[in-house]
Length: 119
Picture 1 (cartoon, rainbow, N blue to C red):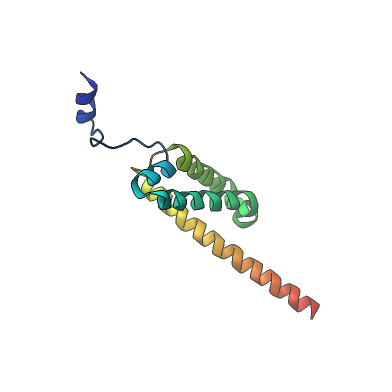
Picture 2: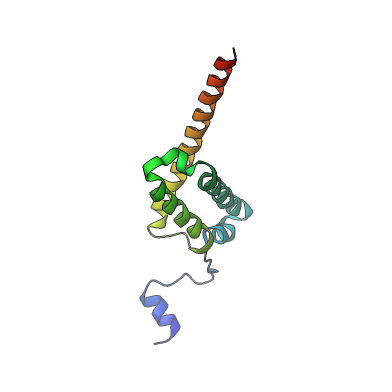
């Protein structure tokens, strides 16, 4: 069997496409530089959550969330965007938005308590 028939048998790639082996480069190829910027921002926000807010926000779930976000970082850098990753990464992107809002609310409450303690 030659390579062409194996690809056709197992749902091979469409002709003329450049294979991309990461979310970032795949988005860059398909959507241009703004597609890559989208995933780069997601990578930056994920790294910020992992470094700053992980153990404070999640408590007992911090190990699970750390694993999920490290897997997300791995996918962004080394895995093509497809299959079940579309659903899982969508969930993690929504989680990032929720976590950012929770952090903002906690910081706002903390600053209000500091103002009340001073006044």
